[in-house]
Amino acid sequence: MASTDTATAEKPAPGPRPQAYYDGIKAKFAEERDLRLKYRPEGTAQYTSELTGSLAKYATDPYTDDFVPRAPIDDTVECLFIGGGFSALLTAARLRERGVESIRIVERGADVGGTWYWNRYPGAACDVPSYDYLPLLDEMKYMPSRLYAKGPEIFAHCQAIARRYDLYHLAVFRTTVTSTVWNEKEELWQIGTDRGDKMKAKFVICANGTLAKPKLSKIKGMESFRGHSFHTSRWDYAYTGADLSNLSDKVVGIIGTGASAVQAIPRLAKVAKELYVFQRTPSGIDFRNDRPTDPDWAASRRPGWQEARRMKAMRLREGDPQEKAELALLPREEKIRRQENANIDLMMRIHKRVEEVVRDKATAESLKPWYMFMCKRPCFDDEYLPAFNLPNVHLVDTHGKGITEINADGPIFDGLVYKVDVLIYATGFEVQKTGIYNEIRGIGGLELNEKYKDGMRTLLGVHSYGYPNFFIMGGYQASFQFNLTFMLQTQGDHIAECIKYAREHGHSTIDVKPETEEWWVQEVIKNRGKTNRNHDCTPGYYNFEGEFNRRQDGNYNGGFQQYYIHMTNIRGEMEKHFLFS
Ligand code: NDP
Image (tube, rainbow, N blue to C red; front, side):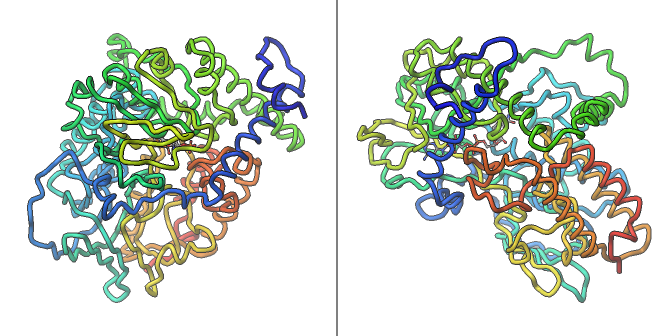
């Protein structure tokens, strides 16, 4: 293997490169990963999402103050959604189309929208083309205004879906579900909330989102900071001003450089008196090339265009069948080698872009990500890297260590105190869990996390044996889709069909058979074993911060098309895969 220095010094050159070039870069990737694992052997425990006591302000909803007291609800509905984001909206719309009327959405925020309700930080926008990301475009007869719609447009689309499908009057806002308990005698779920409700539901759809609970890095002394501070998903516009102009005389610090920070930083850089970016690991920044929607193209879309576009994208993602067949004949090591080399080429292109854009050499070096493509969420922005050429923007590269101490004035690194007026935590979200804030007890009172203690157990990430009439959206053991809303739509269609089937056949309950669940768990494990990616990657939430042993707790890696086919086949043999009563 080539030394690290060789890897760093070697510039990507056109044409085929010797394997030693790739091995040298892989050695550097491993070195950077090990550095981070050494700093944080505690894995996910480095973070807290229990934002109570002195940390409670980081979870408080800054977007509303209309906390209207109401009497507890004590009634029964047919379908109840925990969460009011895209998962609930899409599935509720499908249920409505199938004639289900008794629906309730219970949502922690003051409106629908989920991610797009909470994440209003400046620059928030989708990273998947809007024509794919925004769901129900056909049904809503809506065309997004640009290639990458901005947060307010997406939030407005969520609200429009709720209006179009008449979901608002079914929703109970500012209410957090705290317990979901199966009552075997009544064959109903009993739902408790933080508002003292005692709701009952025949079907429960756990639609609490994939990255919904803000988390903070546990940093010594953070409570002693005397300036202002908030989390990106609770943006304090009362402090910054709607146009951020209040920051023009402020020194701003931001901790973290993940996808949220990458979108917020260019906007902060334009207005802040000084901006300090505290970086632990850089993100890979690819081109965005955003543009307004071409009106002629929009006018030429025919009914069904979005579904056709999504299905085409799914087929294309799966690749050319002949190429796939040829690849399948190669030994496993060779397949991995080719894939890794292609990923390294991509990452080196990203390095090259940093060199071309960022003028200061040391800053440019610091902004280069040293890990394999997709170890961390790829980012797309054309203003992020140029922001580091501005005189008021300062990168504090902690080289994997992170900020470990904060005092009354601000973050401390390498013995230096960075005095800031406001500190923004762009430290992300708790790794997706079924039932955040919520205790879910199925048959025999078994708590879901207790069932999962030796690893998750589901069918398609949606059903779990012992939890009848209970459906999980957006959780693990489902397929990974960069376009998450397509995935959610697919799951929503499936759930609506399962409920329709149970209703039409006069069944009170539907539960997955244990043998079908076991088959799926083995499918997940088999497909996750294809590469060493989880182990080789630098720590992040994609690999549970380096907790490599959690093999069955991740996504199903057999490909979205295969996931979709499995789902369709399972629905074709309902009696074989499900228990009914
Ligand atoms: P992430 O979890 O991706 O990023 C958290 C950041 O905080 C990382 O850079 C992490 O560093 C850093 N960090 C944590 N602790 C410290 C510390 N003590 N000192 C310095 N840095 C620290 O959170 P995001 O909110 O950025 O993104 C979460 C996810 O939300 C994305 O991956 C994406 O899935 C989604 N998202 C989607 C968007 C879109 O579609 N447009 C936009 C924004 C977010 P390290 O890398 O070393 O762990």
